[in-house]
Length: 566
DNA sequence: CCGCCACGT
DNA sequence: GTGGAACGTGGCGGA
Image 1 (cartoon, rainbow, N blue to C red):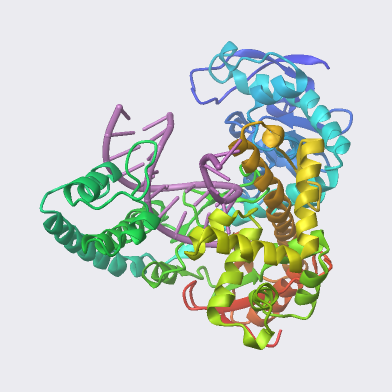
Image 2: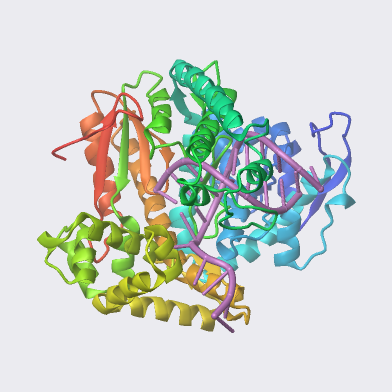
């Protein structure tokens, strides 16, 4: 590698303008007027602030048939979308590769260099903006090593066919944002404020003292000392006062339900009403989330600042917040497409269990069918409480359930829960075998994989500590299921984006909520887009059972109605 | 900065 | 016999 001595300008500190050494191609990208490329039309760029100094050069570069190796491709894609550049260059992401090789590890450049190049890289050795050039100088060798690593674990396709194209889709979604009618939040906020202060007064009056209800410590003292309610459970720091505890002591004192309601309303007010107002952009009327592609252990996305993957839906009080999420910028409808029972369908596919396969192939109500199997009754004979029990079993199944966990979720005895579980495994022996085989494989290899070869390492699977080992075993069972579902929806997102573009439609994807995609669409396009999205999601990965997607549409995220006849 | 708690899938 | 559902993010209190 030839190194040129160049100047790096426009760093975080405008006073810094130091001489550093860079790989030749990088130096050219940053400084040279004519933008000559390396032998293979390849350049390396650290996505820190330095790339703002090279905007024009970068724009020009990205419009060429060339390859840019960077630490974070999504930032480059954002750069291109923000400037409406027609992107011709291929982009590679070291961090994305590193995430697939070892999720959970530190994805910073110095850490990656230490891990993959066995180089001692100390960020403190560079001054000011100099480190950005130094980081870039590590990229050629780092990328080479990571690309080889992906091939070695047979995850190159996962990178190239799913994660990298998804980065571009996510960049586009982040730039698009979602319209929020802030006026819808005002009355909800005022109502919450009134209810909260009224509850606060009633709670203090029942306790006959002033205390901070938001402090679990103070609340515990009031409930379990002052009011003399027998404590249910302890945490490391004191009395536990979570919802399960409060529900258990519901009858002991009339203050308890008020506290549950108070907690719920304060959550809505602070996190959603206040929180969303604070990040709302008044120029565009939209909210812009960050979709993080390299955080979770299983391959799911996460959403931050704000988190738009946990907007309330279960309880009506909070669900109303969804009225504020609306189509904007000339669009008329929001459209939501969600996978029905995707995790249980994935379980059916990877376990190959005959009864589970049959249930999904027949299009049966899966919880009803499970209840019929567990309780040994005909489908028509299943009672509502039996169905609820079976639903909890199916739910827990995916998490590597224990009798204790099932018992507490159903409010039944531990023995009864254990009976349900063993009845389940008698009727679904393929599922039992999958779980045993997966744990055994994890113990042998030290990792588990998804259908698309995403890996998760489980170093504690052989621990002699029961708690640690048990946790690793549940994780071994859950990760291939949750992770495969994540792979599938990611692939579907890439396909949906491709089809929308290919069909010349203006409708656009806005959000992903693990098994659901939210789009905004026009009145004209709604029907066509509903069909397109449903087909793309259902057909993207042919499993041994059908994937079923339900599509809803409406004037906001609260009022959605099923789109029929697709 | 960590623990608790509450929201989502 | 053990502790006991999987994956996340944000607000708050308190050290």
